[in-house]
Image 1 (tube, one colour):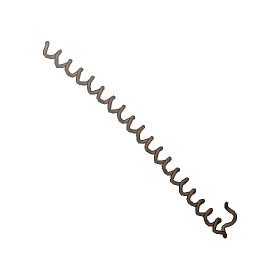
Image 2 (tube, rainbow, N blue to C red; image 1 turned 60 degrees about the vertical axis):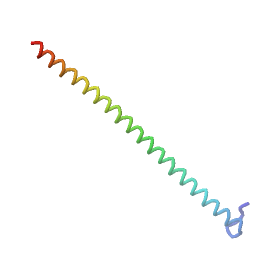
Image 3 (spheres, rainbow, N blue to C red; image 1 turned 90 degrees about the horizontal axis):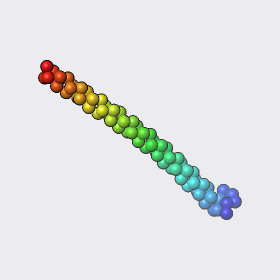
Image 4 (spheres, helix red, strand yellow; image 1 turned 120 degrees about the vertical axis):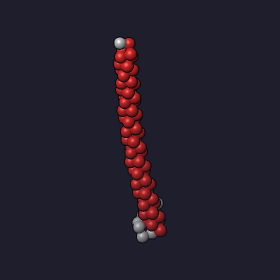
Length: 75
């Protein structure tokens, strides 16, 4: 039971309160870290989409270049 800060119980309650504050602070830090990881994952996903787009563009470019060479050979 917490009565006053001058009794041993009061000191224990203050220490418990500090411990709870530390736990809350660490929980907030973990939550922020989780949000940062989430944003990092979204950035990686966007990078992968961009890479897929570039690979597809390159495939089209290669196909067009091959077609142009084939047409030149057929002349």
